[in-house]
Image (tube, rainbow, N blue to C red):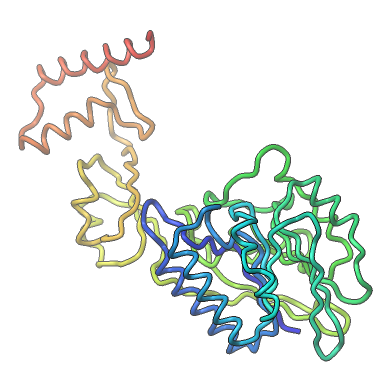
Length: 354
């Protein structure tokens, strides 16, 4: 049997305020192309189908359209809820979907065990939606795992996994799940971590998210995972890389250097090597989807002792001097600079003593 393991679609997510629904439609179309080209026997979606418990209408519409397309193909589809999903909302219509070979497990009280058949016989898929660590461990310990081949679909943070900024952190100790609890499964299809990776063994894997959802994922290569099982169980997994509608990139340089970059439609984080007022406006012709600007302190910037310094390493006075020059076309005089420095220092002292 050939499985397509995906996870963390986060339908309805925005990125620094930019809606990603069109990007998600684009990547789902690619997933359907892979289903066709690879002759996939079953699709797994290991949680965080939606980005939040109350998804926006366009996200609900996209999932509805996707499930209809899967139903038309009669492709066995196994979906679980993640920590971002509302179990109640994701579970809506699940009984009806079962008649079309689409199985949705949103509640963790009684894990579903779905049998699918290939030329070697049955494979049992145990669906384990997100639950707290102790509950998940107890559920797995209490399972009556059928003899033969078994696959688990789960949404959890396994110890040793590599995180990204875009994952919502679990509270307390629920982030620590030992991979050993999945002993006895031929393959474990995991969701939650957005970087594709395996934990402790090749058959315990995160598919990762199909899109980059934070700038610390800029260097990641997003993919889906093809998993194959024969008569004896897991035989191997491989990644198929996805091409986004818009990439996520970080670019660094001075304003003059960045303005020479070719026009790009990618989502951009700019790291400026100088202080610039209104950098987004000044770079809009080059980076129309500029979502974040970080102003990095240059080596030769000298801070004013009388002024406070912000987290980027620049004093309030330095920013004011830049703003003054931007608005008037003149350089701040020494006397005015000294007076403003004293004012900012006094404001900083007053704030500390308040």
